Amino acid sequence: MTAAQELPNPAFSPRRVGSMALRYLYLLRGSWPRILELAYWPTVQMVLWGFITQFLAANSSYIAQAFGILLSGVLLWDVLFRGQLGVTISFLEELWSRNLGHLFVSPLRPLEMVCAMLFMSLVRTLIGFVPASLLAIMFFDYSMYGMGLPLVGFFFTVIITGWAVGLAIAGILLRQGLGAESLAWLVVFAIAPISGIYYPISVLPDALQVLAWCLPSAYAFEGMRAVLVDGVFRADLMWLGLGLNLIYLAAGTAVFMICFRLARQRGQLLQMGE
Amino acid sequence: MPENAIEVEGLRKQFDQVVAVDDVGFTVPAGGFVALLGGNGAGKTTTIGMLLGLILPTSGRITVLGADMLRQRYRVLPRMNFSSPYVDLPHRLTVAENLGVYAHLYGVRDVRARIAALARDLDLESFVKRPTGSLSAGQRTRVALAKAMVNEPDLLLLDEPTASLDPDTADWVRGYLRDYRARTGASVLLASHNMSEVERLCDDVLMLRRGRIVDQGAPADLIARYGRDNLEQVFLDIARGQGRAAREAAAE
Image (cartoon, rainbow over all chains, first blue to last red; front, side):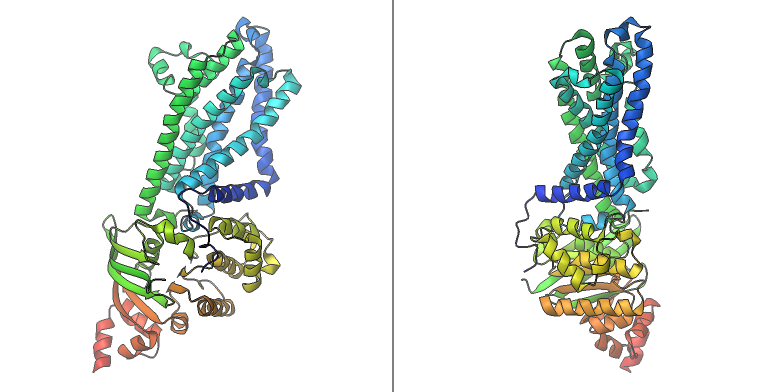
């Protein structure tokens, strides 16, 4: 009788998800520059855009209406980006350390690994978002939390979009190896111009508007502007964004699972790494 | 416990135009210590990868500890483990953290006690709190072996477990494996280039060449069959395609 076989081996195990989360938390805990870096970029962005916004507020009636539009846009966009990066970096850690072979001969299932990566993405994103949003109160007397509960909805709408993109990139990394590493830092910016982060979707050309409304992130930023400018919570935008996100997350997970199967067919799980 | 720890029938793996493993069939009896021998590119690592479920076969059947590895691998993965110099552990995690993560993944009940026991048995105690990446090759090999033992597996698959080790450490690892098998009755499949290691440890040897099993038997039987003094000479006969001639010469 082995030490492990006394325990049941269910199809999905929160314990195994927790094991993987523990692995990433050990990594994070072991390096304070990494924790600092997580908070650094959102804070720098917030400070930079905060001063730009202050300047514009004095010269633009639109900005003057809602000082927080640009600032909130910047921070929510960062949530999307960090959400994606949080998934992809966790996966890259396994490639860099040539650890995939060990992980997938253990009882760990791919879906459990996906859940662990999503959890770590949430942790990493919060480490960046919370200090930056608190500093915005200190520096500019502006609180994103003034949006109330809708902020939670916007936060999850954009982070889930980031997760979906991150999982698809992790799948591509499985397929292409570390040669595709730069995708982790580039891909998500392709949707920035049509997500309506800093301007309404209506300013885009018609064709791009159609594309924009296919992105869950567009609903989050439009919804955010509705709250900040008009003082109205648009539940329709929230539900459409979250609904679209379900499709995106399912698609991202499917890409990862398909690429995982292809990697098994090609024998890449034993070869992946630097 | 089934009679055989591993049963393989008609196993084939083709990567595009390259046939890495071709119609391979063998069994590893429960409690057996079997070696896969072959030159570089003979198909050893691909075969082990398929046994572990890391590589999907093109065709064939693999039964491990009574479970069909294509359909039921998650049933038996908690009872197996694996070590290879080509697969690493995260360098920035300490030895204890790495072993802890894998102990949790394998569902080990008392993780702390298990890590302490492994550290004692495998002489890791002096560096168990150090980052894995800061260890010497010999220390890392012992840590990899500890990871492979973390769930006290019934079946152990080892790919070149003593590669890049000095003779003293390699001998120590071999002794540990022999003791583990004697103590637990576990089955071991070993891929190695080290012929004296195979002679000392294994009951049975599968000789692979260009993805096919070209001969099989106990080390002493193979040496006698080829009329050689040791397994290394048998290996060279087979690797150089002179196996049949050597066998015929020995038979005369």
